Length: 80
Image (cartoon, rainbow, N blue to C red; front, side, top):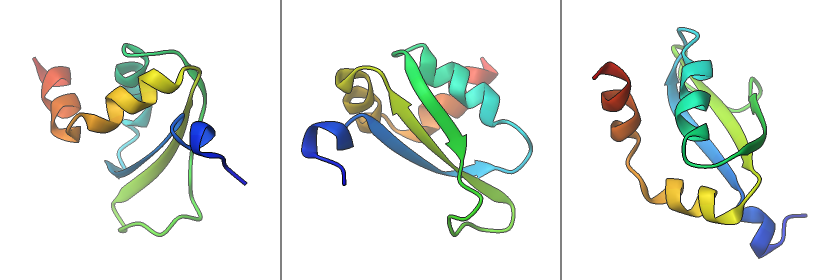
């Protein structure tokens, strides 16, 4: 069972293109805070061409801050 404080350390990222880009996305997330653990959730329902990733941050503040950002930001920064 997650408590309120633990829950905020976790992010569930959906809609990741199933092209093996999740490692790049992890690197982008790590710029904003240390990642304790992450993994792809194969059993989580997703479209045929997308993946879902579970991320656990070391600090609550990192996950809270990233939660507020739009996923679009990560895709555009990587290409600049």
